[in-house]
Image (cartoon, rainbow, N blue to C red; front, side, top):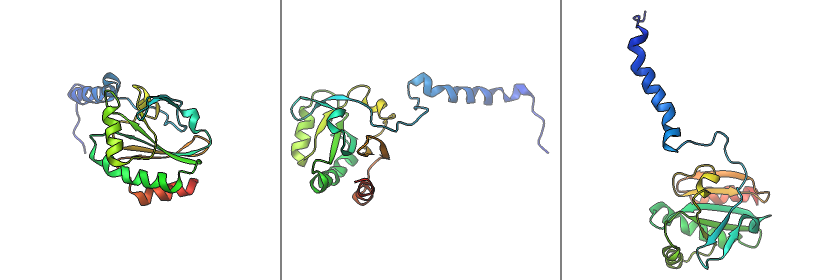
Length: 172
């Protein structure tokens, strides 16, 4: 039999629960109640040449969209996978799109792209882009998007090429 506790003795537990439940809203780190199922519309600046790249530019294509930063070791590790996918499948019906979350101008991103031989378009993230994709908090975060613009898969963290290619082949 459990010992009887007065409601007042449970007050610290109730207060702790209340604090934990309200913490995400107070810090701005709340997650969307409904997961994002379609690629959000965007208009972002190309890291290569400064032109504007729109989500409309990819209508009818299968995409691998990856959020990354130049200073992120797992992001750097994933680049050869993305280059290989772009080389193998990038025939007009498929493309990899990198979204850099680096702060400041695109010069460092351009240098990163040149150093690693990136062969796919890279854009600079806007302030709302990670939230619009369903609260991207960590990098790399990669999305597989079908020709209808639906998000088929989300990968949080490094993705092995065998996994990513298997999932990609299922939607091509």
